[in-house]
Image (cartoon, rainbow, N blue to C red):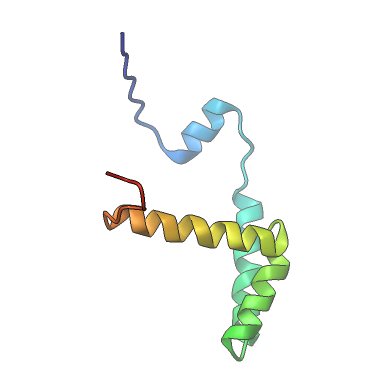
Length: 85
């Protein structure tokens, strides 16, 4: 038996329903900090170094995120990995 349930709600309503905290203020602070740092960056290396220090889990988190983005874009474009038939 298979049952599908669809819930139409906003992300804020979903967070409230699931009991997750409201992170809007923390998100605003994080975005503002990044925007201020980007204004002072003169080149790509400075931006990458800043992102490594700011990101959760440092460089490991950045590599994980990069891998996620690469795999997602490959999946979205319909690319197959070796062994997929």
